[in-house]
Length: 395
Image (cartoon, rainbow, N blue to C red; front, side, top):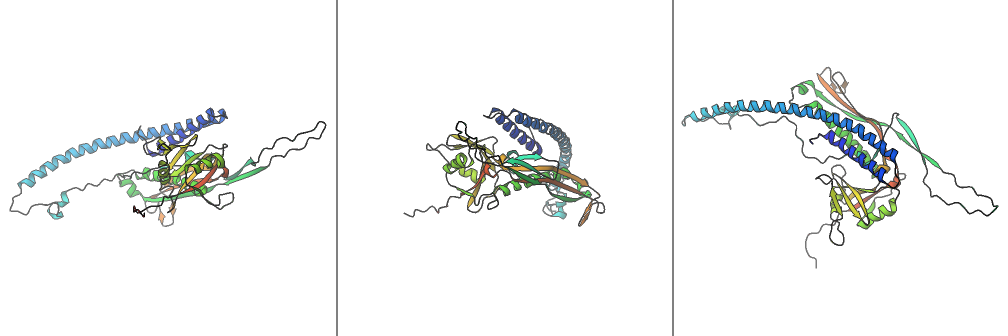
């Protein structure tokens, strides 16, 4: 099925929620209610997907009609070119020949192959949204109450006729959120909007949606890789072998969380080079042809691996980043307003008055708060790049 970027994003969200719902239903602690809630969310996303597909199909039909008109135009131009070829053959040899290399001698008549369609270079798009928790809220700030984490102690023995001792009462804490605004605008003249062969309005709106995704990605990686703050790691955990990953999953994270691994292209390559004692790779890619998701054999467990493009999550000069743990439990977004897009031909900003200058302003605003919610659910680590050698034998 041909899909545009928005359809791909919706499908990725639906797939992620279906997998999560299946896991809740098939897991040891079955949660039918939460699984059903997730599937209801999938139904809503499916409605939006179907609507987007209808619009996409209409665009395809319009493009086909345009293509048929262009084919007819090319056929007419072909007849003109045949006539011009005959004229060129009739030019006498003792007369200065017409040449497309010289504008005045005919170069002006040769059309340039210039396409006004906006082409985009191949790009590895990535959104962290399927791997985090997003809660839609209706106020600009709020709080959630949690029981503090503590070890559960057993009852004390009681002698016959003896007094029963009190037990420790649970303690509670509150975590807060405060919604902040983020956004931007694009000024454009109506002449350009009306005269361009490309649908610039839709193109610019699509680019603004990309900025929303980039904002959420930046919020996630900035918060998850911060060190030295309150409740945060003092430094990245150094990882050198598969056993280091194994210990983090088995001991540091523990069985309370569903661990997965998130790496960038550099980290993916490092994992892809790991082999067992029989020389078999420990990483098995699956999914699409770009190897965005895979599975890593970690001891007796198979752990999901998520690949992030380097342009989204860059390595340092010496280390590649890695996040191990349950990112959905670790990171939470409170979404007050997904993305508001408005186009006005009467608004004005500093240096540009849309009404006076016969233009338009396209404005995008998103409102959210995003933060590390459970610091115990993940470990931020770093993998040192292998030292490069010059290929000489020092011995």
